[in-house]
Length: 364
Image (cartoon, rainbow, N blue to C red):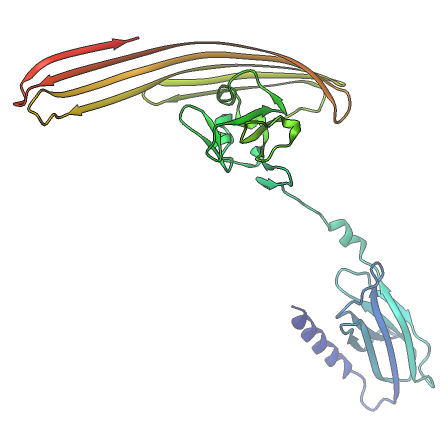
């Protein structure tokens, strides 16, 4: 890019350099100088230097600064001139020269250019938080930056965390080990983690911290690591709330609903959350046994369902003593009931395939 700019500037200056009137008296005068940045004092390569007549401001000749910022103008007619120095992003500078009659050498020394104020106003620095961040003592998964987690529950967000696995029953494992400690805002929770995540919308979680080598402050004895769920916090004063409802259908319908509210005034914050989870889960099984000693063969088919209903509620108060110290208290309540039903039908047939005995077992 620099070579291309230099080529066109050099071509322009070369053309302008031969624009002087033929036959005009020319002195072997020379003008030199160095162009630098006003702030960092670094040379400005490819800065343009043009020589103009003081009488009518017409262009006489020009040059371009080299890598060290140095420029040189040669073979100039006798007369009165000024030079103009400029470069992209800088404010042009004009300097009057002493009359060139007898003086054949002018050293202008260091000429500094200032960055244009208009360009300074146009500078905008933008930064974007990454989905996954690595720190010295932990890794951080920014749930709010993960579009695939939005609209789901905390379980969906947890499934997207690298190194974390969630099975069909909601059991959480870290690097293949289920002996992992789950915290919320650095505090232990009183209900099972899978229940908490099922009833927590993903868009209410700010980030999840993964601590694979926890320090003593986490009391990590006997655990493979720590997963710390950081919830979004409303720092403004006033009353804020959110509601979330989701309905799904597999073999049976399922629903997950929650309502949360937060009231903050000064250093005090009150919050409450109520979640209702209802779902029925089905299972089917088939078994065939073929005995080689010509006794009865066995065939069975089973079908079952498991209905689970739960209500979780949590209410708490926080007092923000300082930016780093919080005094808090909370109470959690959980109610749940379930119903499990299974039906198993078994058939015995002789070696010719004729029915022998049949049984139906129902379990509740």
